[in-house]
Length: 452
Ligand SMILES: [Zn+2]
Image 1: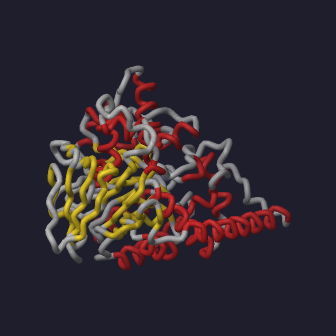
Image 2 (image 1 turned 90 degrees about the vertical axis):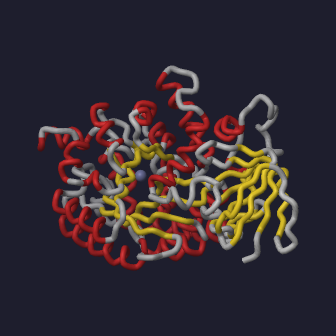
Image 3 (image 1 turned 90 degrees about the horizontal axis):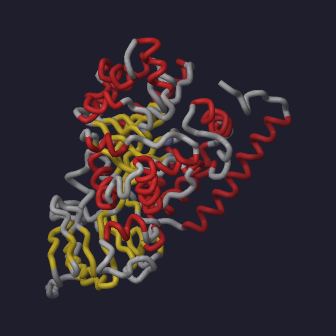
């Protein structure tokens, strides 16, 4: 691939010195960043030159927690908290009974397209039907950590089946250049039983991968672990050796402060998904204290049934405001830290911090470019670029997105996916889902709304 020289109006590197070059130049070759320079580099004759003097360029965002097929349920979780086992079961599980494998691909295509369009270049997914998810993510060009969801809910056979499927899936994704296979227990203790958890930890060792779970969404695990083991869920996880493995834990709303140092010492990331939590009426996570204790933190949208958007710029904004509101303190989490969570924090969570998350020589060319003339940037002298990114602009201001130096979005147009076509297919899939569920209800099935 020829060298690409990109001249940029504003270049946010997110390197260890947080260099911002105005203007700057970034040189790409063979999918990687070769050079990052302050000022305008002159043209080497063999290079393609892109003029992005009207763009703000930054690392692509990492959505560290989502469930792409669940865009099929967008709008169906109103009035439910998906952060309690009971609420999730009644609002989501009762629909999942009626999913067919054919419904998955259009949903994943819509999700991937919405992520690319709003500046995400890497995401951590958590679901089943991975055989249907993988081909669409491959086509999308996105980078991803795909966790095979393991939902047991007291059914040991279901757990065993999911473990077997997880193993096959991990074998298939071994050595994939852009996709990593992860293990996705829905939740420890309150869903996955001790034997299943043990098998999951062994699988993580065998495939040198991590676990993507939901943790401390409502205090249910702590209650369970205190009752059964006389200690908190985090301490019980430590006893089991679960914290020796890389772990991505969504939400972490109710972690007791005495457990923070244990998590800071582990290869553990607390993933914030503030929209989902706020819409569920849940507590705000003690993010400031967790970061102060040294816990790695990242940002995700969660499923869009209760968000209901993939726009991580919106998510950054909501997180900043929620944390100031929680702490009763202006700028409780500085804007630059929030951008760092959505870039390097996510990269660290996935063990990819040497490859992505900042724009530095040697790293992969995963980057996005925003329209510097869009609403919200002015006056530039007053507003630092991190503040503008978090509080003033929108994911729809993203004009270009690249993974490995390949355009997934070019001048606002998706290059790898047909969003309109995917939306039409998703509407048809939803109509079928609804019809299957209605048929079951009319025929007297009683498993549609079951309180557990
Ligand atoms: Zn989730």
